[in-house]
Image 1: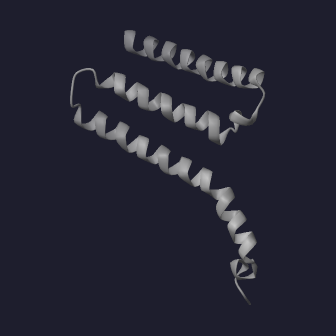
Image 2 (image 1 turned 90 degrees about the horizontal axis):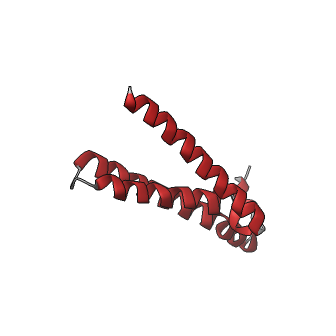
Length: 103
């Protein structure tokens, strides 16, 4: 029995490569940004490193919103509300952290 990939012709393989390119590159970018964030957190190269870490997290959230959730192909109103949803979750997490850190 032949493996499933062997039954694909060249056009099908090219289409699969084209469709998988964006998710794979996004995954690799998220892994690289995670590595940057972990490295910055482990080494603490300067006092205000948390600002850089927040910027890295913001880029990661933007990648997830635009690529994984495919918001960039939606109408502007849906983009607005998806961004507001992530902003609202950030507020809730911030308020929870404030409560825990203040006790």
